[in-house]
Length: 481
Image 1: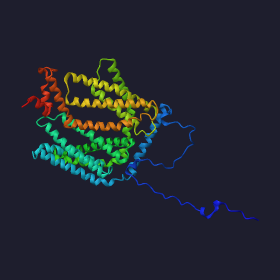
Image 2 (image 1 turned 45 degrees about the vertical axis):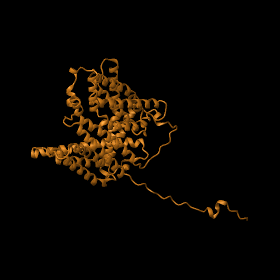
Image 3 (image 1 turned 60 degrees about the horizontal axis):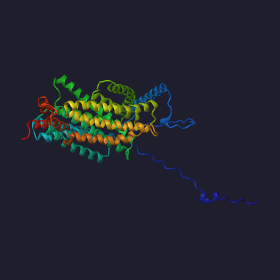
């Protein structure tokens, strides 16, 4: 019998068995602590036709309510269970330096306030040091363990240097006057600037290059964390003061109150990566999402009353409704990478188109007040806010129009929010600096109105220049020397 010729594939050169691949688990990250884990997944039969998520026809309203309720209950139970089972975030080691920074901040503020009240040192320099010590350490406390040490220290140092000069300038401008609203507006502008800058830095630390989903996540988490830490510090201060009144019938001394507040804030910031913070952030986003339809209704009523009647909506109402609509649109859109039901996409569309008429009504309300009484410090800030309102209204309305042509619904707000964040930061820095000081600009406008005959000398508000005009108003009243 003839022997069968071997095949070429049976040669010894091809006799090779592959080895099993080397399994390398990724390094765990503290940001992955709240990510869901898929266990025992089951796969159903594939759908006969593929339909894009944002173009699919969702079920009825009852189905949406049932689905949202079931999903909310599942998430609530899961996060409540995780609160007792998770040992904490991977950056738990940072609690000691965080508390040390909080304690050092409180002690430093106590010494600075004692020196200011005792008349020791230059009051202008002390005001700058107080401003820097009040805000800059909070950035380090919040970013410790989440931002790389080198950029965090650079950002904190730059902020401290800028606040030092800003505090000194503010003390110089209010010398001999009642600061009143001037100090409040300055604190608000500084808080907005630092919030946006810290959110951008947190998002960049999580994703390089920067992705919009990370920016959304970091912004909402930072907002909820700031509110939570502030409430925790306030409750600790109120509880200690209550105990002090019951025992000694007098409040706690300042040297003890400030370290208590700063240490409480630092301790509360340790919850930044826990399930509680994630649950609060998710709840805030869902709340603003479901508030979007009522906000659309009230904004529509305001616009109709303003257009069809002689009633002029106040500036505060238009600005508040615009701010809530922008927040609701972003809460509904979220990171842009998840499916959104039809009612949410339609609500985003309607809210975006209500922003331009609301901005126009706000501008008309501001213009009527300025035409009668001229500019004041708050009206200068309101005018800057109206410019931002108009910019958001145009960009969001444009994003809604582009969505009609296809693509992801309202996706263009991703390209608008990041540049607008830098615009807001620049505007806040300008208004807080000597370049765009609202009080200085308002005094110059009032002086121009009197010199050019826009208001009679006997009807001119000299009390505004002497009381609210700070150093600039007194310089105008005293005249050239």
